[in-house]
Length: 585
Image 1 (spheres, rainbow, N blue to C red):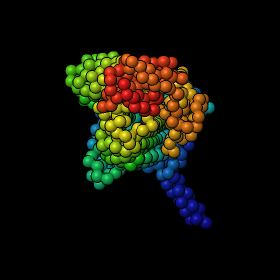
Image 2 (cartoon, rainbow, N blue to C red; image 1 turned 60 degrees about the vertical axis):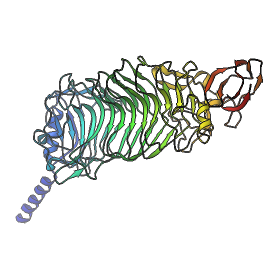
Image 3 (cartoon, rainbow, N blue to C red; image 1 turned 45 degrees about the horizontal axis):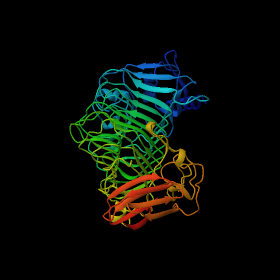
């Protein structure tokens, strides 16, 4: 009997020993005592050492200063680890280590233990740490209550939160991540590393970055997000990256993506302020190397894309490399600016497209006058490289008064292009529409299968100067903006259901068009020959364009009532709201 009791005790003790590990809710803050933790580093150290026996919640109860970088590297055994504020109060975790780690760079590293940060890369330390969530939402309270940051000092390798290797299902949401470093050693707020080691090649799946405010303004190469690699990769990539509903304000790059297969980018607000002369291209959202699969970019607001670049290649708000299929829809592009004189070619473009295939649908592009228009480069809405995207239902508006080489689309699209709306200031006689064509009519005459139903239409926005490109004023219910709804874009950027006859661009006004059901709307007009030229009588306001038979635009004006123009003897093309008539003087 005694032997049985002793054996039972031994078995019970062994079972308890095997179950050692953390589980439950722990308080983390400067006033907390055991079994809770005075710092995040202390809590992570125990998780790394003792392991995970159940779901873990670390609730941050105060501001915390961490003197050394932290690495969370543990097999979570299918359980989860959540870091969140304990109450509806702002909590800040500040890192002060100035030196870089010897292995993965970063202040808070997920997928690599703290002890491993002080020695070189090792396969054994690259530990898939899955199901980790950093959540700044205070239960029962408000969002973005948790901040991860560093000091305004020269933190080398300042990458605030980094996910390493096969750390799957990691979510960073509802936080403020602020990178203040003055060091230019590729700093960023949030990112991931796909790792090729001696015997391993691993990358994260299902990384979600959601509803954060990411700020990186400490120096002129600071970035918001970066997905990168360590070692020479052969097959493995990060997969299924989701980046949604964030506000990103950074200098050099907003989001840089490498070695990633499949990505969703939606609902974000992007603000770029490139200061200093970095001497190379500055990117906003950039798919750089090894991006494949399908990348959907939609419902985003590109509010500001300012550069002080004077001696490099310029600015690309969105730059998409070849290798993936890109679908870009319901985005607004505004705020492009160059503030200093150029000494060499400075190319400015909202969307540089070099994808395998894809769609550019229902976007709104607004090109403002640049603070300093001097340049030997170009200023464009879309620069095509590969020419493989369909371009439909977009709005292109330019308020460019002076620039030597401004245009909407760099080349005549090879796939379908139609139902786009274009407008340039009549005073600008050098602004091109598509490729080398100075007017929509000239372009359509030379390319009769492209943009057959596209029009020149002036568009009113809520506040274009502030980057708000919602339809407003006289453009609400303007039948000239009516286009057939595309099956791929059933809602607008705000989530409003699109009518069968929808608005071009990213925004669907809630008011219906004042028109018939025919999407090809024309105003009633009478074209009369006069001794000096032509008179056009209009029943309503309309866009009037006059071209020579060679496609050279000689008049473009939005007017109403009676309009007259002197003409030499000859044959002309007159377009009224897109309807073409041959006219002989």
